[in-house]
Image (cartoon, rainbow, N blue to C red; front, top):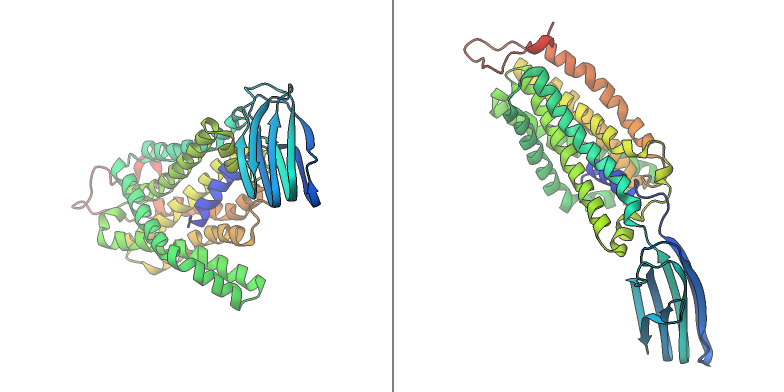
Length: 396
């Protein structure tokens, strides 16, 4: 089971950000043979306008006799010939047109047949049409890199603290997966059974969001209590949060990029299976920015929540900061959980989802600045070269 926020990002980058025009149906028809045995053929003409090979799907179910499904070129030469004397189901078979646009024919030929048939030929999404969807994938990875570089240059934090953040995030997510994979299904089904629809959506969404707070923020707190060097100063504390958010953004961006590249270089049926889930997304205003904007929001929330937890450990005031951090991360994944449970990801503009989680990011900015400016200064005997909490004017 994909974690909800990650699920939303992948859908937005690979599904909702799929080409505006779905694979075009060139011809589609169904019919019956009978009730008396028949040998009357049906022929349908269609036009291929691109150099992509069209894709044939056919279902034939016979009670008696036999039937053929053929795809013919303009000279009536068979490009595909399928025969059945019982039941045949063909899905997404590529028709080799040698890249030649023009008129083609689909013929269904029964022989003393009784039964049903259904055929469809579609013009798949061209590889060239999906290149634009490299932009959101690359954009998410660029956001991850930019966050790392900005805090590194601003604070001089050692790279190991960014990696600590990535490691703590990985442990938290792994534990959440270990819990969610066997238990989310039964828990959500039980809620759906016991509660009315509105109650199920509310409680189920909060439950999904709370998993992030419990595991990601909980693991951060435990790690900081065990390894208090993480919380020694603001430089490290913020680096841990930036590392967590950037690592997540880089992984999601890489997964999205891999899906786009696979669709570009793979066969037409693969492109259709990966990119046919949404038909109007490209008409969304600035659709290619949705993924990167979501990653900016997520990184700010990761950073503020980790900074709160580590500031609390540094101050010896654990539970108040932990509760605030818990609420931040729970809030954004509650929105993602609701979008998933209510099935709205493909029904509304993705910008509404981003708008719903934007307040958490807006609140995160002053939280980060406040933590930096109020971080306790490490004592001289524990300070290290990268431990100055007043780096480059961040503290008053």
